[in-house]
Amino acid sequence: MEQYLRNCWYMAGWAEELGDKGFVREILGRPTYFYRLVSGAAAAILDRCPHRFAPLSMGTRQGDMLVCGYHGLGFGPDGTCLRNPFANRIPAGSTVPTFAVVERDGIVWLWGGARDTADPALIPQFPFVPDAPGWRTLRGYTLMQANYEYGTDNLMDLSHIEFVHKGSFAGQGVIFAGEHSVRQDGDTLHSNWWMPDIAPPSVAQGAFPPEAKVDHWLDMRWNAPASMRLNVGVCPHGAVREAGFEVPQAHILTPASAHETHYFWSTSRPAEGAEPEMDAMLLDLFRQAFDEEDKPLIEAAYANVRANLDAGGDFWAEQPLSLGIDQGGTRARRLLEKLIAQEQAAHG
Ligand code: FES
Ligand SMILES: [Fe+2]
Image (cartoon, helix red, strand yellow):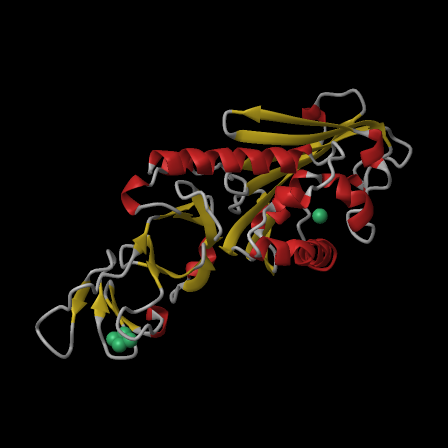
């Protein structure tokens, strides 16, 4: 059975998904209903009535009470059963599990552990995600049929752009001219590519004359369990980074279950020149890269080992080769293992 890190924040969705009706998403193997209370605060509850297991999301609302659409039991935001239409007695064992949620940076975060242990100070920073004056973000989502750590491997090792993304982000050999470094800072990992003195990469098209020489960086930050931020930057060769530009992206993976992963991504840019046609073009490019290029490979690679995992093996038992470039993913896997082991030791 998959062992998850419990005491950390999992991205449940984009804040705008909460809407009027809320949304349902399987997270850590649990169907979870996310909705807004009358106060506007976000709430999360197991989407399963304890009577005959109807999804509570299919019911109705009376103020903050969720009324089951099957036989009418009513539940408050703390999961307690408040109403039984068939008797005055509230049945024993009728409390539905609820979870701590925080809305920050335009993201709904779910605490994987017990509600009263939730620590919002541990939410990783994604301040660039919300639209702001002069600043615009495109957001996307895809569901991958693979364990989330195989997605982390992909994102923490961007050498794959040279091979997988020929049709989109087109590395044009820049990775081979670059230096890769992995650094740990507390429980945060950085997997960075630095590519100095190269022709302008595709991301910088139009920003530099074609004959210019530039320095280019891809800085990936990782926080447990699999919340990553990528800074893609280009500046004139030899100049300070601030003389160029940097595009921040979110790449956040949340396990739906051991074998399925929610992949949330975003890319931001100055609003100036952010015409709708440009947005549509960028969205297409990113969808092509993630849905048509990364996803089939990650899913097929995972399918190649899944039978062994189901039989009780783990990633390391497959004896993966180490090429050096994969250090970021390896370190993330090792750090996550350590954090899970520490957590389990602390909770017995
Ligand atoms: S299934 Fe919810 S009240 Fe019966
Ligand atoms: Fe990729």
